[in-house]
Length: 426
Image (cartoon, rainbow, N blue to C red; front, side):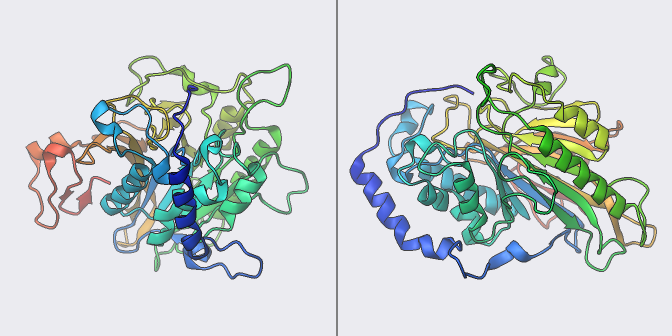
């Protein structure tokens, strides 16, 4: 995470951006009192019964501001002219077309408050591709979202009121106050028609990792507080109990994936070779280690933690059974590295087949990244679950050993998705 001075945007373009958004805000936002929530937000997330898979697109650090009036940062000289927030929007649309995600997760710094003339309108534009495509989406706060004309609670309340979102302000009925805004969980049910159709076979936890320390004796970023960890522990225990109890009790907990913005101090545990991806800047974690990593290890169900914040880090490495992963910077108004393409992380979770030929519990969690390089090149395939050593193929392996199905062939030189028989890279 670095700080930088931003170029000033033309006020006339900002006014044009605001005027255009005012024409569409009613169709995108569903926050007014008395409005009935529409779209997929009330639907239960569920594994596809045909293919037994569920796919997530992570969008980290859009830093959206005023659309066409907001210029790009750290791009090549030939890319500067005409580059704006709209490049970020176009990238999201291309990712949706390429990956067809079942859920989009925005992991904070979704808008850059300092440069957003109107935070609410900037959010409308930032999340518009997900809303317009009718894809369920969820968001957490970063450390910059509240730096405009809405505070953190106001930003999260606006997010919760938008169409298609599964985001929640905070859990209710806890019996204690929870720190932050945007602490919630989502469940993914088993495939329709299977014995696990009525159970959550995959769980997502979303937490507010804060913005900056409010303790005058501690400088730097905020951290996940004890109240949030208590909520996580109670929620994890409840979900595990339900999954491992009748009917159809399971022997192991359903896997969990945790999403927040600021990386934990444990992200600094990796050397130079024990991860996949790149580390090009320091780990901007809080100066306080609140013990949340230990809490997750103790819970026993978490397989991966997915964050943003450090835009030119995109690595993913395993520590004590949990993969700690960055998304890599997505937004063009966010700092980056000229010549190093903006990128997005994809996670694909697949179910196992039971002896009866039905879909069962989660078998594998795979991840890769796509680059906004003109080809949407796919890089850094990893198997996150199971952890035990087993062959995991790459595009080069496939070219050498398998016959490509006629069902779908993309340009292998660009590392695109290819179906091999009944298996998919995802």
